[in-house]
Image 1 (cartoon, rainbow, N blue to C red):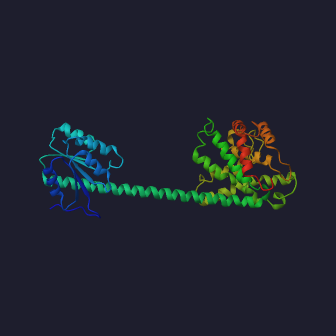
Image 2 (cartoon, rainbow, N blue to C red):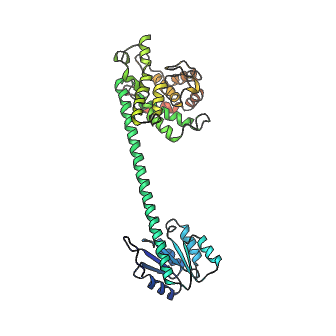
Image 3 (cartoon, rainbow, N blue to C red):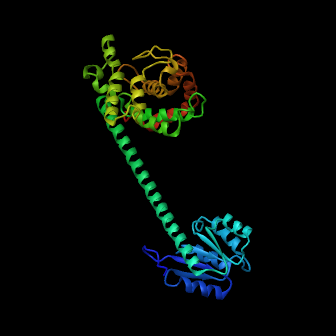
Length: 369
């Protein structure tokens, strides 16, 4: 004797037929094994299928007044909320082309009348087992997606916390610069967004990279934690010897970030852009910068973006060795550095959005301004 499926709640079968005797026959056959619902036409069948709780399987006649079974199946499969309900055609239409049409519409099986009760029960049982397995896998997949999203968010938080903690080290050593690291990260993002469709940069400046550049920018001067106070905090111009020591903050920063990457077990981690920025943001397009005298495209894109952002902010803010220049003067100086200090295309992008830089500077102005 056929046994109900093992599991939690009893599964529901919807029987659709315009002949009362057929509904009575099928309901009696399924009784005790499944919860049974009936519909005497296609419109009623669709209404039951769309309502909660939805049936787990539908036994569907083809020849009915109004909507025939084929049209009912077509609408079931065309709706997101009913597409996953398996449909078995139960019909007197026995030609091969009829079966081909029914299966082509998305039915899982096609049974011709007169029926064999054991065959009907076996096929219903098998397709309900498949439905239960499919539902389980679908639920597991949803849970897996949720877990991946949670883990991804957790990793992002770890990245943000790591970068913030490291960036704070540099900021606490050099309190003269105030909101400098916040302004520069916004400058870098604005410039990167402007350049993202440029042929020279489109392949590199995707959404994920721009977000990492924004997060990494505050680490550009992390190497200053290794510069002695007598030089870092000196209230006046540096001597040539002192400047040589100050220049080492680029390699000190690179080494600090590289050490963190070794702990993470990867030299291509989320800190890669931070390492490039810390090491190379003092390089110049014409090769006259430091620490390695790189020129042109040999300088990483991340460092070239930071070089322009860093210089703009240094120009418009007072330092112990210089007064603050106006925004207009800073724009003029950077424009003059096109092709010498700065990447020409990046300079052009800056000139196009210079007003955005001015607004960022105003939004994150230091308290004494």
